[in-house]
Image (cartoon, rainbow, N blue to C red; front, side):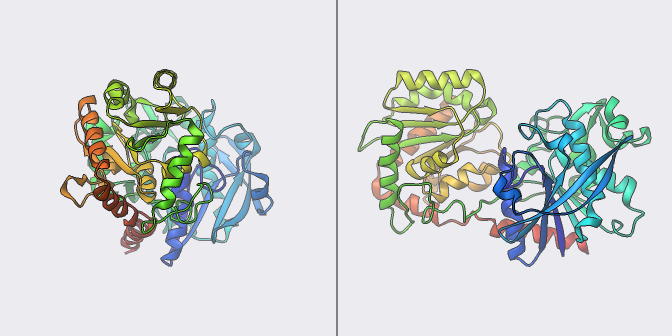
Length: 472
């Protein structure tokens, strides 16, 4: 079985969020299960030179983008045993940043069609093309409309994964023909609420639609979570499936992590205490034998639950805890946390940046990880926290509900709350703070968290099972 994984970003080449982690780790896990899997992505100018030096040019083609014909160079590279194809067009991809440009619709119309057009150059005929998010959502539409008559494409199946349904690829209908090349006869597929909606089109055109957790796959069938697409998803519910993400255990491994000051394991947690001590020194937190460090590593946006954190902050700080925040985002939230760092000097540390090495040190040196999201398709941070023995507090939504179980039953791995309000959040923090005070019980909880398997091994098995069903 051969799978071509289509992603607008992938580690180690380009990353803006969790999609890159998935595109870097899942294909590697699939190969371990004897599935041939290769990845295709844009060749961004931001890709490091040392990675470019290992790329091989394998050819070029001309890609129709509506009435335009655009050059597409195809480069091949290898990382962790996985072959990557990187599609080159400097007009579209020699930019600062991966997204947020005025012509993103045209850039990813090119990318979606270029994947199909460049397939003969790859010498790789996939049984399944696995598309991800709106940037490649046009691909199954193009495949069905323009390529099925060619034997190379006639039997290819398509999976479309929704990583976050909030981002749907919505544009004015005026670009449907001029940019995407979709004739008016296709409006029943591509149009939704008088807009061009690429996610809606992919849901209807793909053979399978997946989300990144079972709970989220059910949530998006309701108006509250679906951003308008619930009625489309209900019509296609028979091909909808939720498969929870994993994390790369080679990258996130407290026993070998080079970013942290002392390595540790579930059997020997002495190194975690060293990490905690060093983190306090690095961030200017007071020494304390009683206060746990509660951390948040996230984009500072409301739907991550930071409005609840704001409302409950003084109550949380009254409980003998220390807070660490790493991330950037909305101005009001950045200003709030800066003010809290000044108000609670020595007890609150805030870094308004993204620093991968510091993120690892925070995961390793913290006791508790706070993730009270309003919605969370899957979430990777809670999985990383568990790997490093940092106990998560989460709201029961999406993938958080599927991966974190309340320890009140003595078999859970964290602390959870259901209602989206500040009181529930503060109460969950209070329960975690009380649990931290029981040193022997906390040690058991930490060991339980670290010995769970949240790698891609199980999730890759679910994808293989789905792929095989599609081939029947």
